[in-house]
Image (tube, rainbow, N blue to C red; front, side, top):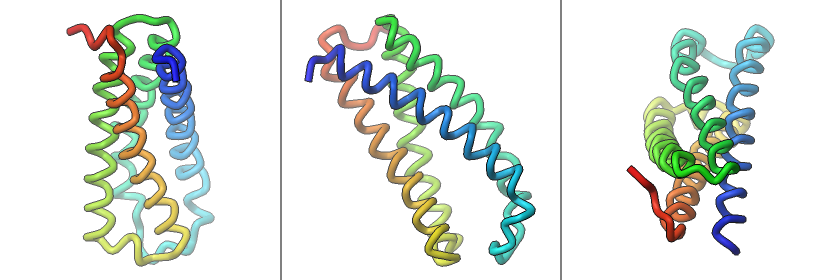
Length: 139
């Protein structure tokens, strides 16, 4: 695949991921009262997470739009976002595994496992795509 097309794929996936992240938090906080299958109150723990995720979603959207425009800052910010995604995916997996969140239900296991895997795979894909570009990241 042509590197410019690959960077546009990266940009599209970044923007879609950011929108999905924001929608996931909106759904979580608006439907929480109807989700009675949780055996304990996770809301106190979850309230702080959007403080990191919403600005990160904004950064993903910014990186994606800059990549679409062909700006060098898009590659740099995408590289930073990729590092965050890998860090988040691995860290969240460890937290969920130690807290036995995967044992709560099949739905919880599939949802959390998918998010963790998505973050790690997308982060690696972004790294590889940017590293292939002959016009590498400009610091």
